[in-house]
Image (cartoon, rainbow, N blue to C red; front, side):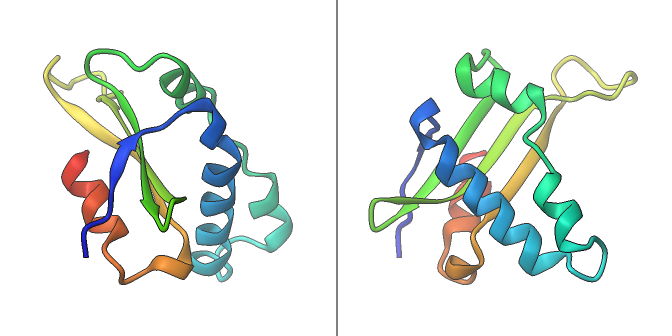
Length: 111
């Protein structure tokens, strides 16, 4: 199955937040209580990349059946000792409803 990946748009924000929350609730209940997970907000740096990606940053979304089901954020490395050409995968989430359907693989390949 081919999963389309495209640059995120501000209109995708609600679906991005829903995928992030669903993934966190499914993956981390043994680490964080639900109340804590519900308070995790999108870091300002993600919002900046969503609004205005730079030449070495991207906010990508994966879609299945026309709906955003996951996202990845890539940016230059935040490590002080990293070479200028070093990047990092800053965020990577897919909704549990699509786990095993290729959305994560497609996002990683695009990132």
